[in-house]
Length: 380
Length: 257
Image 1 (cartoon, rainbow over the protein chains, first blue to last red):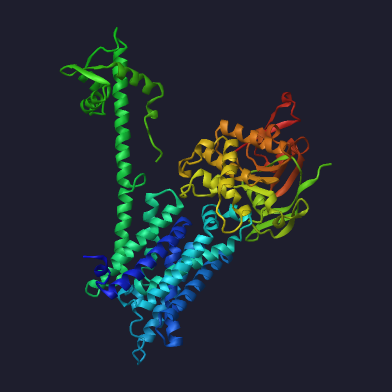
Image 2 (cartoon, rainbow over the protein chains, first blue to last red):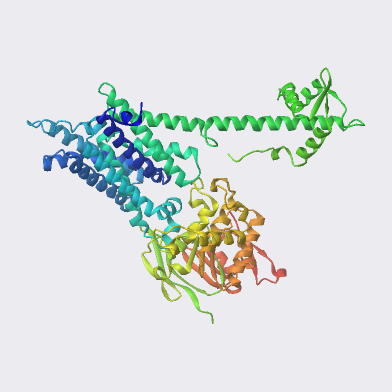
């Protein structure tokens, strides 16, 4: 199959995949900043807060053009965000309380409006409820253009203020003392997040959109220690989850897109949590095992050296049972001796009689001089 | 008479109507190394943050070299408490140090060769040059503190405010830091340090401000760092050690817990 047939398989699927891919890139990239600033829940609050904006925009214009609805969503999400910031600044309610408050009040209001609109006699409102859980299959060419233009703009602004956003995310107060307009930049960054969220609402839905903000960033953090790589990787993961999820839900029988995309994103997160180098759980477990083994090797070597000191030659052989006693409760002496033998540090002179080799003596002196801690223990 | 480069008048800060700093006056001459000392909750960090416009005071003025602080930002460097940031942020040592140049660099421009060289120089001065490429999550407390100092050095400021730079660092790092601060002073800079260890005040600093919500005393160590003032700042919770044999005027003190 050549490329042109591949890309011609299905016009609808191509449109849907393109839209979901772009919004995955945008939300993944901008989500990194939300996650690093410990504001993962802000995305959740804002996506829920967007619902009344969508319905009100429809009620006022009687139009279901996605541009109108996206503007309504953005406006409501943005107002929700400003309210959260000001509640935290001017009252004693902390950020978590403010988030929960705005999320539930706005979402409840949105649901009420939605129920009201759906009872109206005309049928123009049909499909508004798709904004709850998302329907990527309904994405049209003009929707994808809107997603592309707004998302591209958001990424461009992120690039322009990259170093400022990085500094404020790492050390907000230091950035402020440098004279950066910290508050304005905070509002700008959160506004970019609002854009990332609202362009995804039609495809993913208000209820689950925040997962596409948080999950790719959380997964990407596992693989890298550089912000630029993290942002790029999160964009890639977001696109992967978006395209896969949209494709599956478009082909499947009436599956809502949001849940499927979130499921894909969750799988990426799970895989990253387990298998990423350094931070992954499997990796950590392997490292622990390795450290344990290194310690055990050192313990056996030093036991053999202690024994050897009691004889004329340091290469005097001893029975394995003596070493077992000296390594009480640790076990695995036989296996350790075999490993050390493979490294040329010890030799089995006859059945169960083991002795240090010259290299083994050197290694034992080396390792015990600095203590067992100097076995290559990496930073956790 | 020295020029006063820091001039704080009537500074008052309150959280929810409870005063944290009350009517603080503080004048610091150029080229001094000044400690701010006082018990926990005395408002030491708050004082620095209010001077740096990070906390809005209820009243008061702050002049840096005769002009309001906000006009003089480029002259002022800052070393926050190292516990104030998340060291698990995905970046490396060199990158953090270069952040000190971000404002001077201007909008949109990325740090380049010049910034890299400045950062490496600063890392050299704090003895961290071999850590330039190290992930910041892998630094010890003392190393974190040195990175923050290096970041302040590349700011190339005239006046530095440092919030507990000796907090939780080992003796070697403490010596390295105080050597650096004395070098800064020798270069004509003014350094204000929130400090906890009363015993080292006469040895490290030449100027001191004692604080406990109100300003208890502020001036040269010989004048201000007296038994009487310490007792007023710390209340009864203080044990005093006479150390006349060191030739230090009067006494030094250890705060009781």
